[in-house]
Length: 451
Image (cartoon, rainbow, N blue to C red):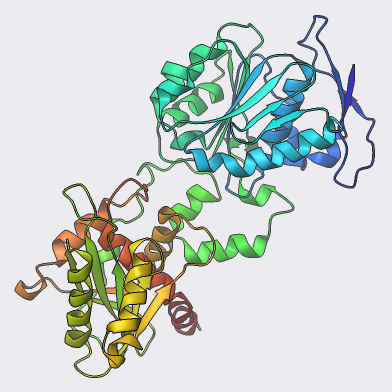
């Protein structure tokens, strides 16, 4: 039986590649032009792929990790009958690779595969099944007899998901394999496996490249199709150490912490105010376990820097929330410089925006701005933008004083910010929202000072 893989344009490709470790009657010859599918760095991983062990690939975020893994798992499933898993840190993270693999599987098998959208399962005509799973609950990953496994963004998955559930699932067959792809996130269990493979442990292969005699990871720059302009824009938007992690694939020692104490050294007693803003992160519920509603008052200076003037947070019912926002507005518009009330237009923020525009005083209602961030950036990504501007001294903090009792708890929250969606970091979220809203002005100021 021969399965054909077609190019994106639908032209049949006939260059043959075989997986020599398969020696029984279930072998399927898979035909595809791997030189056209993979860029050179991806191709080097494919050629050295360990089909009877663990493959560890730590790469920059624009390297093309998922494209590589999609082809690997499909070729594996077409070549050897069995059960295959694609595991992501969270359920939603699997949506994009599932849709891409589904499209490729339909094209490759000429529509003979079966797709279960609800369970995110792809069944091939040879009997192989590819299922998409999440590591939210490690115990749910237990399975007998996996032939192949892709762990997507492995560094973000708990170690127990690997050691207690996934790794034992690969022991039923001598020719089972695993591909771990990830951008580094500190020196955790993923880094430990990376080190073991680099040191030559028999059943682990670390994929990378030699640069001036030193083994290193593949970076975002190793993808010839990635936009170099966008990568360099990230260099401006990200703190240098995070850029090293996200694009150069460095294993940093801070385990993904976004803010560091040195960022808080840019302090002034007061600032020359050009415009003032209040950024609000509103809580969706009020109970002991829920987040606070937080307000960050920021002042944009004439040289386009952001001075964090005041921060306040409270647990309030919806009716109280509106009164609190109105009181903040009147308090901080004493000189007529308040330009916007920035409220994220999501969850309880939608009702808050609508209510304020409908019932607040006209001078308050006109300041209300429902903020919808562009794209689908995570809390972690938003935090990186704030940290980058802090590192470049574009964000100023006040001096410690009895009047600024909010300052120390505020800084403590920023230092503990990791971008985990399950953490309540309302002051950090409100700050990140304000920085994103003012990012164009802050960038202009940064460029002006550099010239």
